[in-house]
Image (tube, rainbow, N blue to C red; front, side, top):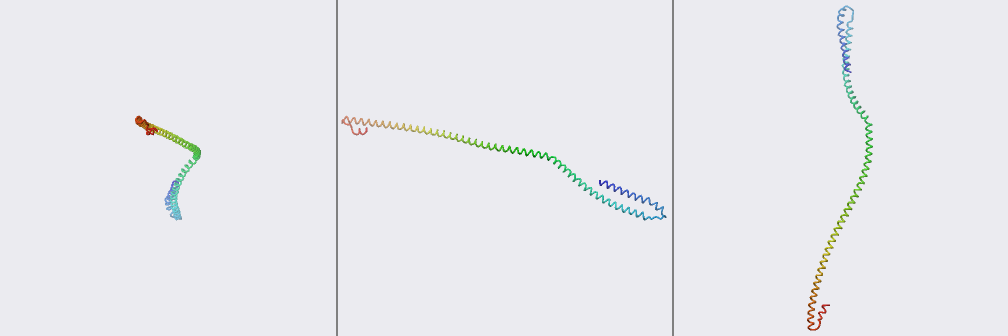
Length: 221
């Protein structure tokens, strides 16, 4: 936009300069034809000086305006870029704002799911506690069964040991009884032999003396 304004100003400047050049060329014959007339030639010089001064001022102002226009153009470009960035940001913001209801619905659904999960967690926790109680009960029952089994095994072992002791005692008793019977029979046999020998001696003495010895009576007593 400012480039077109600058081009128009430059065109106007060139047109004014061409007019001044045409004025100087066309006025030369007239001054030659009017050498003898009563004309103030300085008036044209003043007008030309005025136009040249104005032209110089306009040219300087045009240069300043051109520089200012360039600065403004640069500022406008910066503002345009900034506005473009802001517009893009606003577009993203609008897109995000449009998705807010969906996000709210999603958050609501998540909250409902979290509530459902909390209920499920509570149920699972209760079930886990029951399961722990059942496991403890099962372990206690298994320990009781194990203790009963060990007690039964111990009882059976002790009964077996008692039976072995009984058998051993029975064998020992039988052996002692047998030994006792053997000793008794041996003693009886020895006594019978002793009695028989004494009886024979007494009989021999009785036959000889006709009396029973007193030691025989003491022996039988």
